[in-house]
Length: 210
Image 1 (cartoon, one colour):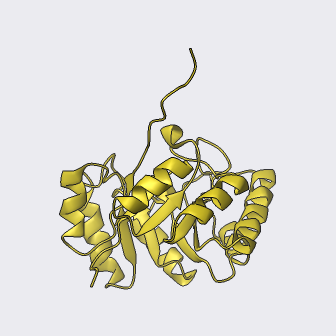
Image 2 (cartoon, helix red, strand yellow):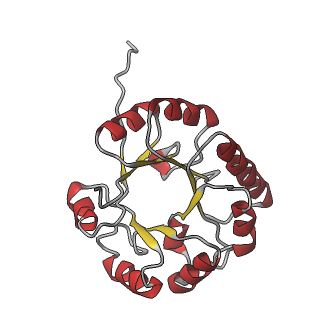
Image 3 (cartoon, rainbow, N blue to C red):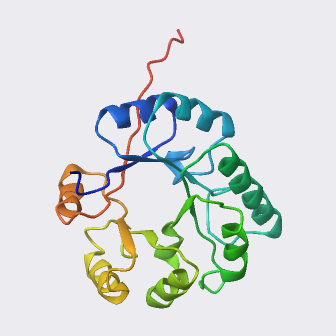
């Protein structure tokens, strides 16, 4: 029986197929991985869904940069969640902050109302929030049980102290997906603990241009 989740971040059909062949058990689909990822196009999702057979979680992030979104961006996010829900996505990966670094609970809850039966992950907005323990408590009251975080450091290995404190604080009721575990050594460190260890898959395409 499989004891851990190996989630791969992908931004193309080619990388999604390669990830599944390589043993991934779940995908996080986005576009523009080189700048941290943004919401994928619906046609990309449909093409990936047609080719692979493992769960697909969709990053909902309208642009690069901070996680303080305008009302226009927030409304777009709501529509996108509804759209991916109706097209059969398995989960969404979201996060919104207020300018003071506190989780934007009211608008996050409005996003959650659109998810239907999709699972929800709080993404790395958590890593720039002001009070991680308070944000964990708020996320739990909202029904968010999975958090993507590197312990507010550049990599999960650097953030192990906070990751351990969060795990203790949650009393096993939350799942922490260590972010930044893109190297084999770091991924093994967390998968040995039966945790979810996300990594990144980029598949280079040879150019046919002269």
